[in-house]
Length: 423
Image (tube, rainbow, N blue to C red; front, side, top):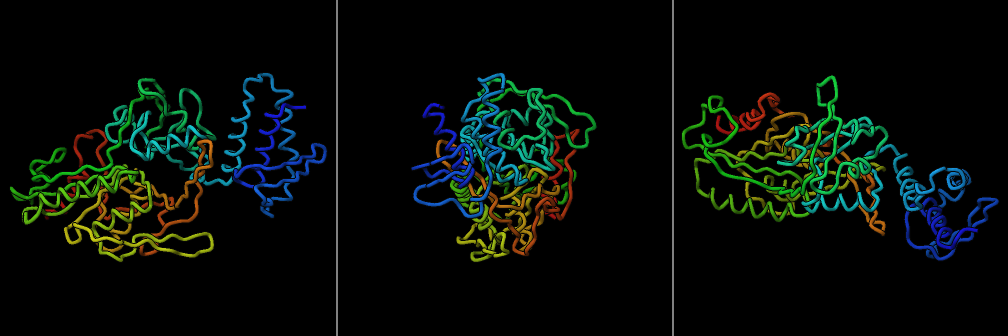
């Protein structure tokens, strides 16, 4: 007979597998011989779709592990529980529907809040492979040469094959000043290489911007923008993610730049830089888009599994509604940044310059499960106002410009954006 504490843990696992969520257990009667449980969960019966599932193999495996596995220290009930739930969610085959154990869920929330400890890289999955969606600006990852599109084959010599996103994040993040070694395959490279990175405190300032004369802009070749007059200026806005503080920081910056640019006839337009922006909150994408298109315009449409569509529209008056606009994107521009870019192009409000974006066209609902764990579930796909689904295809720019990987100090994409505004 197992201890009372151990027995309760086993019963908790059963509840999760039968109901899909934890709401508290009042009474469980279990017949170990027949494996036919009788369960009451807060006065509700389990969903009819799973009442006929035979869980005997699950319990047999659990019992066999306990009886036979040689290293009993590895049989931590909470880890077994998290692994069971992760496996259930992972079986769907959707990399964006994930179970986040407490550590992973905390990491996610810290990232959205704008500060965490790690290497500073947004991860994603393509064809079951862990990849870098985008390194964050001035992060240890970026300084070590990590680039958008890099495949992460190993972490500290452990292959990432079969890992979930949450597993990869948990292994790569860690306390500041500790080291992690990533085995990386750069895009277009034939052989992988090890990259040693010292973790740090990552502070994400999601919004930056300035007004400058063209001749004062760094990282461009003035010979390629000769059409610019001596006093021509541009407004530059960069958004690195759609996080907890994005809207507040955005309004503060935009209001400041608006005051500085009033009645300045030398300003030729706005460059909106969404390169290496991995996305974030859907509502923030709608809010930011409202800076450039009129109130009432649809920004994005959600389509659920039944084909029903709902739309999110601009509900405020923006500042740069009539200012000429170009948008910079690349393969690290994903999700919410693609929503903004797609809407601005659909309304012929802006040209997209750079490289084809990442291609994440689904929407996730995030919920806390208690005890620090979380669950992200794909609930719908999103479409641009013209009904375009970018999933796994991305947005192709109107003007394709690649960065020179041998001369990263020269920003050819920014240079082309300025050229478009001043021509």
